[in-house]
Image 1: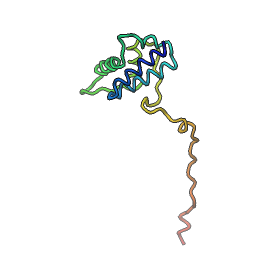
Image 2: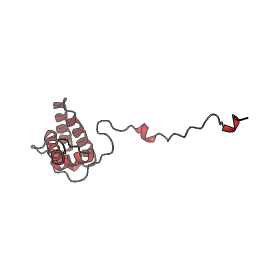
Image 3: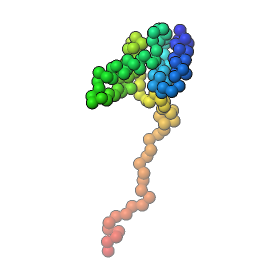
Image 4: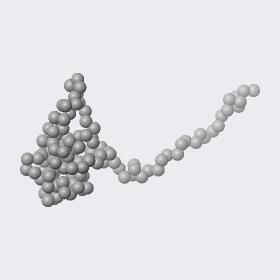
Length: 127
């Protein structure tokens, strides 16, 4: 079932190359399937698509709009996607869905504060 859900998601991503949002949500769902394989059954529902989950996000954002503008955080948006598909649980977000964090950046040691090469005091300039 999980393989079928992955294939369905990838097919929708490939079928909509011009819509970055479908790729972002599709990638989120693929990552979600890694931690929750039981969600595959819900994703496989014939009437559920990534595009329609974006419509659900749009409808929710319209409820929050002020002066013709609305914004959702990643967590809010992905929670709406999970709710649309009928998947229980909270979305795990912590990095950009477009560019996952690099392992090197996470393991790099903190830089030491710079040590000055010389030490000058005001008294050195006064006679």
